[in-house]
Length: 106
Image 1 (cartoon, one colour):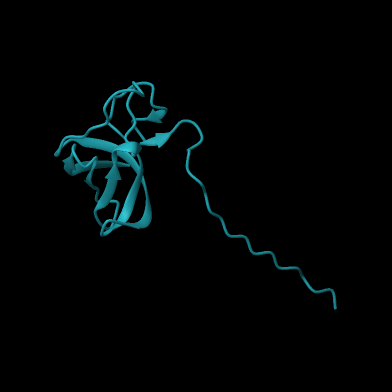
Image 2 (tube, rainbow, N blue to C red):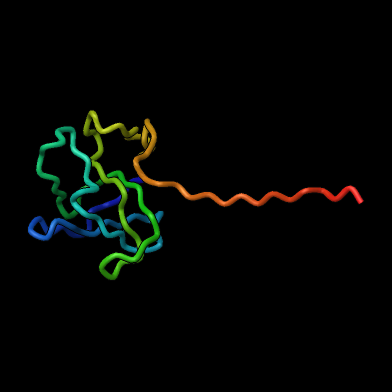
């Protein structure tokens, strides 16, 4: 999804993202920021547009945490800029819940 960097602190290595599609501010750590060069310093600028995925999780006083963040148009990060989604399998765990009910033959 698309969002905006509300704040970023290079020294602390984290910041806050916002998007109308998330019901609150999203905490983002530098380790979630993807760059075309994996050795590059991961940093964001307040006010810039980003693509990101998130989860509901308590982190430093925020109810939501970014799982993956990238700047739109960055090549080689495996994201589709139009959708803001991975082209390949995400590197996060997934949860599912299954309920099976059998019909009674009696």
